[in-house]
Image (tube, rainbow, N blue to C red; front, side, top):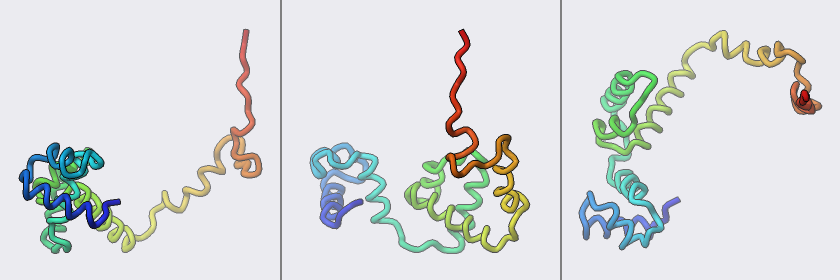
Length: 139
């Protein structure tokens, strides 16, 4: 968790050394208490706009769709001109929003019964079906 006085020191460091000298900012201003990457991400968060527009939301969704399952958040962040954490959090928020309006799927309702179908049943009093089992060692 960043403190207000650390944010002020970070801004002074960027003014002194520039927005690409994160090792120098980390070493001289932050006394190595924050990593260069941490300083860079925090500065991006401080300087980026606080609100997302509808156009940015659409652009973010399109950028994520280009990657499929292997999302490269740093690449998306550079395209969006925001921090990768901000992009990821916003995308997660947008996906949570859409999942609320969608009807429940069959997998979400059958999730509770899948553990009951496990061989051995659900022994919650013993900590689960495999709890207490010992491995047999053959000589």
